[in-house]
Length: 372
Image (cartoon, rainbow, N blue to C red; front, side, top):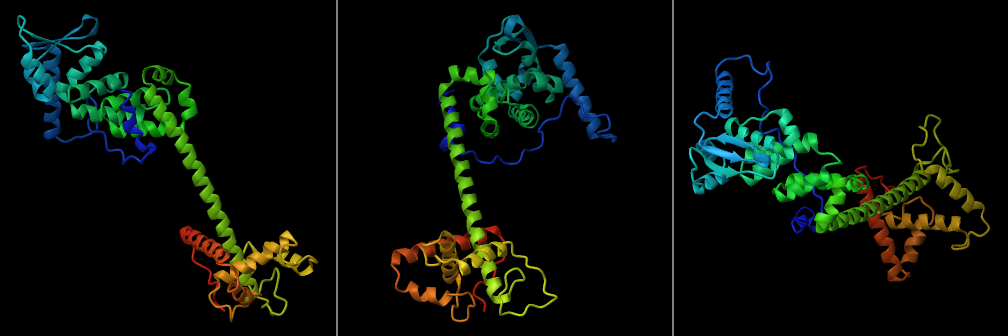
C-alpha cells in the first residue's frame, strides 16, 4: 500500500480530473413517477422483483457463503459465476459439502456481504446500504471483479460521501482498488484542506500504517505551496508590466491628444471633449510637475526624476517612429541607444518583450504607441 502511494502523486502533479459521469446504477427501485408507460419498464421491475425473491428465499441454493461472526448467506453458483469471474474460479475449485459448496468472504461486515451478493442478483442496491457500506462494497467489487458496482461506489463517494473526515481512508482504498480518478479527487481535497485533514484520526492512523503515503502527500503539499507562490509572483509581475504599459499609453495620450488633467499647454482642447479615461494620467501629472520644478533633475539625482527618465526611455523602446513622436526626448533616447553598452540594451529589450507579452495575455487591445 505504501509503495502504491506514489501512483496518485507521481511527479507531485495534481491534474484536473475529467467530468464526473452520471451514476452508472440506480437504487433499489425507481421513483413512482419515473415512468407511467407499460412495457419495458414494467417487465424490468418485475424481473428485478423475481431476482430479489430468488435471493431472499434462497430457492435450491447450492452455495454457502461464510462471513464474519459466523454468518452464512445461501446463494446460487450459476448466478455468482455469471456475474463475477473471480467467484466463478473459486466455485470451480470448491468441493461440495452436503448440498452446498462453502466459500468464505470475511473481513467486512455480514450486512455488507449480503448487500454485495444481493447486487449480484438484481444489479440494484438499497440507498441506505450504499451509504452505510460504500467503502466495503468498493473493496468487494474490486476484489471480485464487479465493475458496475465499483463504478457506482466511486460515483457515490465522489458526488455525495467524500468528506474531510474520511478522505484519507478513501485515498488509501482508491490506491488499493485501482481507482485513479477517485484517488485524484481525494488528493485535490487533501491539498485544499490540508490543515483540517491533518487533525483527523484517519491521518494519524495513516502515519503509522503507511508512512510512505504520508511522505508523498507532504511533498505534494510543499510543492503545491511553491507552485502557488510562483503563480502569485508571476501575477504580480504581470500586474506591474500592465501598469507600465498603461503609463506608456497615458504618456502618449497626454503628448499626442492632450488631457484635461495635465495638458499639454500648447494644445487647444475642445469644450465637448470627453473626460480622461486613463487612470495613469494623474500619476503622470504628478511626475511631470515634479520633473519640471525639481532642482536635482539630473538623472540619478532624484528618485522621482529618475523614474520619469526611465518612463521616457521605456517609451523610446516601445515607439516605432521617433521622428514624428510627440513624446519629449523620444528621438534623443534612440540616438543615445547607439552608444550604450549592448548589455543595457538587451535588458531594455527583455523588459519591452515582457510588457507586450503581458498585455497580449490580458486580452485587451493594444494602444497604438507608435502612431503620430
